[in-house]
Image (tube, rainbow, N blue to C red; front, top):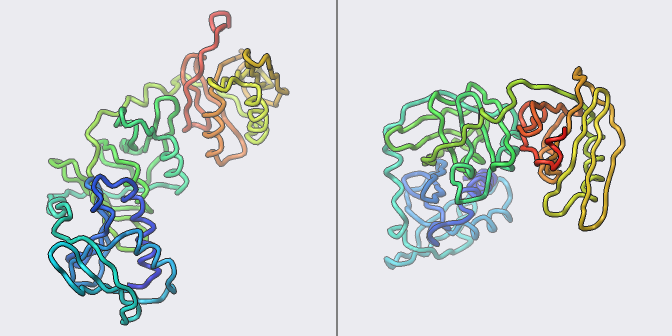
Length: 354
């Protein structure tokens, strides 16, 4: 295999191996004509012309390959096997250059059963933009106590991520099957281009083929949890206002200086032709009142809501357009930004008076 192809595989395999449950999973496995990364829930493999069955230390190989020329040919050969550990040769352009030691492959967890499941093709699935994957991964929760929120939900024509405070949903090419499924973040990182996806219904596994030029396959165990009813939080009777995003972000940065460092609360005031930000921190006796920014809206009624400025800034940095559209229904309902980025408001003490 060319070093440049192997290097690309190792970059992708990195997402499968961040926190191995077992130390032995820090190794790749070369077997049955494939080079594979495995973490008990996901198997990522590419064809590799070899008859040997070997475990290859991932970090060592990644460092070694990074020093090779792109067109160098890399192969592996078995040198000694004492039944507990293995010595292997790493051959560059047909000549053994390196010698590595690894555990015996008999100690590697069983992975072959997921290859034999009966998969039914669902069709094609893909993201319109690579940045959409980044947005989803950024918003998905890291709280292992809420397992469903640590995943990405593929719900027919939409992929969704949330952490309970913010939510992002993006359209899919062709869409996923009628049955929604939850994929772990590391598996979503492997989704490239327009993919053919299959499902083993009785085992809750999916198989897909990333369009990454490696002829790769991914076998992934979906998370068996109930995902929050995300459609219920999207404003149904939307009122809208549009402001320049760059101007809004600059004002938000200034407002954050005076915002409370615990709540990061920023107050957004919208009127017929302007929008303005305010913030204060009672502990520091500091208050900020921003400049009026031009607002395009057909709503004559003023609207006021509180928002977590830190989370809002992170979300808006993921928005590409120069214009920022703010959609709302009530000041105690979720606020929608540019139609697909949603953030729950922060309750203000004087809402009852608004």
